[in-house]
Image (cartoon, rainbow, N blue to C red; front, side):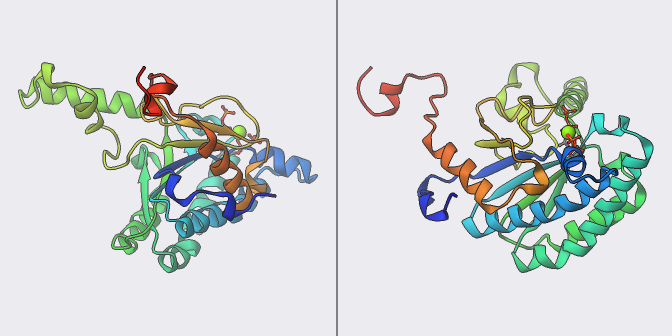
Length: 251
Ligand code: IPE
Ligand code: IPE
Ligand code: MG
């Protein structure tokens, strides 16, 4: 059991990203034949994780909710996920406001059903003045999609002579990502024990610390977030340097 008191409040990440995985396996483990039960149960995990991040004073939480590749799942599952998305955004809006959370979204939002786009836009508008945690949902999102979109915008700017090829660097490239106001996540959590990034935030996770837990997303609770944070706080983030340089000694 991990406790909040084991976390150093001065060493919290500013941005946590989560690959919420394992809903289908969770349903199967419960003996439920329909995977959608897993997705429904996952709402509690989203709520608890969001509230805990808000409580801790984390500034950004980004949740991978639906990938570009997830469109290839059986039609019934995709439809059920989209319906669940609409009903959840609607029902959770008051909780977001209560916790001073601002809703945000990245991804190919235009590819979502109109009802989803509408609910999302309304809740983003409703919460836009909230000054606490920024909760970003990655929807119809993939890192490669985002990078290709950025490259297209850059190509247009170069051909319109509004961007010089020589001025393209890390900083300018970032301006063309889905949301350039989001800092890189310091911590990426993946549930359900899979050791892969599945096309999530490929540009942004260049130096992110990764915490993988066997816990299936519908079982993920406050203490699992604390465990991830405690693990994160034990890491030495060297960014290519050597340990002695970070500790102030001459190397
Ligand atoms: C994550 O759980 C939710 C989405 C990808 C939408 P999964 O649905 O991938 O569950 P598993 O990985 O099959 O258990
Ligand atoms: C990653 O989970 C996508 C989301 C959590 C939305 P998947 O279940 O789609 O990933 P893979 O297919 O196991 O890599
Ligand atoms: Mg999965």
